[in-house]
Image (cartoon, rainbow, N blue to C red):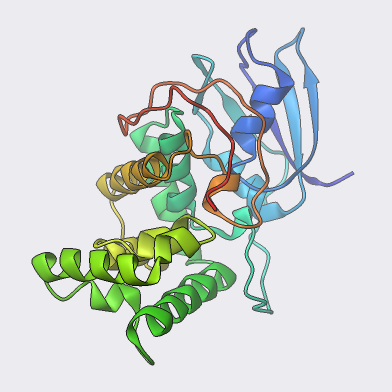
Length: 264
């Protein structure tokens, strides 16, 4: 049994095991869940310590109108990544990015939790594997659409008017958003590509930035014709959570449809 576990209490009587799996799958891959509904407590076992650390960040988060208490008997430390294989996992993402996914999904996270996510990123930095993925994606899309040594985010940064026109022309000619395999490829191809890249590659963020990214995630999925985003729909290797019960998001996004389809 994995030792990367957190204890969850103050769970609503309406919360099912599937709801817990949905909620905590945004943290990273779940190994198992021990849930005693009669006592409203659960133990979530994750495959990696970084996922457990993210779960602790959510202490005070709302699920089924109940404020969860998330604790752990041990300290969880982010694991070191020594290889860059072009892939990343949900637990590799910046905590601020994961927080934005929660808001886009319709869950309620307090400003205190969002600030907690910002502080973890500031102290721990961005996962080298995720950082490598974003930078590589930006360069590959740029080279394919604009020519050698060009990046999508760099091109659309020039001026707002030209950026919008350029991004639209590139997309129509090259079909980038249709070919993109995940949210990040689509986002980098948008006029705000540079802003999106900065959000995921720098540790200088504010609570407002997380809400803005949550809106972008929701808008991108809505434009692609899918429902509210899940952990699976914003990355190629993230777990696909079951449908759960979401609260009202501070990001004010439409979460009436909870289609777990990924963006292809």
